[in-house]
Image 1 (tube, rainbow, N blue to C red):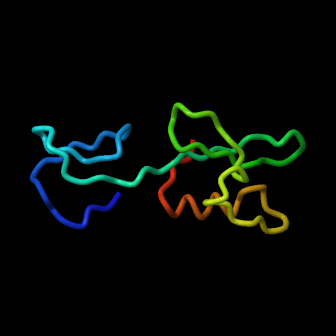
Image 2: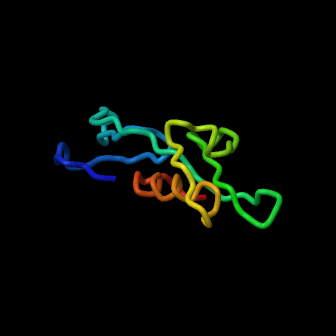
Image 3: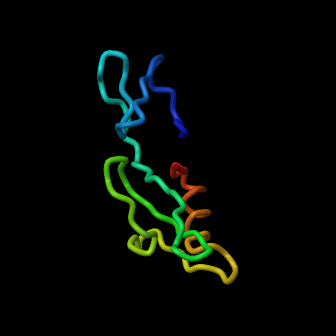
Length: 94
């Protein structure tokens, strides 16, 4: 997480929320929400990437997220290219 300006002396970061708060509760900056990723067996010998936007949501196959989907390369696990892309965007690996 990167903050480009020092706005206040003290900030509280709640990982369950998408905002910074000053110690008196004043909101100072909204953050974009990052999702979570995990690998699940695909029923054969490989693994498949699963995603969810919030911790309380069910896992869904990465192909169900066209906005994040990156085509697979031969020889890689299903979703590997998407995984690398989302990892660079600071998604959480579970």
